[in-house]
Length: 205
Image 1 (cartoon, rainbow, N blue to C red):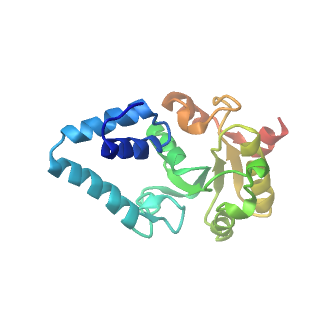
Image 2 (cartoon, rainbow, N blue to C red; image 1 turned 90 degrees about the vertical axis):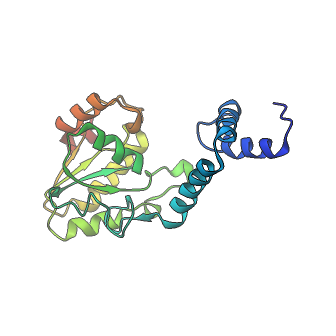
């Protein structure tokens, strides 16, 4: 791609570093910004800078937050006795969009994947165990992507919490095995939440 301006080329290269953004899309975004007023561009850059500097992570569930406790954990109308365990923040957004769940969340920050060098100690598993130890949790729902790594993570955590008197379930396999949770349509994901099954039955299959 031949670009006549090095300033334009540098901007395109930076946008192209974002996931899912190719050079053509990056060029289109940069050209769009060039056409905007200085005030609009400043507002855009300020929003990105402020997000990076001021964004926090919830001390309870590890969700992105504006304060030490996110608005989900701090919402008195949410069911405190139910925790939905997910891999990433994007999965929280996916589950919330179904409007079928009114409990709390716990974001692991990934799944166990030895081939990628990700072990249990690199995930937020111990903080989940600590939340369950307090005795207020009645059900833990695993909403991890249905693949080998997700199943391994479920099995590992199940063993960690099996001594506690808590119901452990997982979303039904309306999500195809090998798929990614965040890309599931809202109807399928919502039905999977409603039709969740005991995790022992899931793992045995």
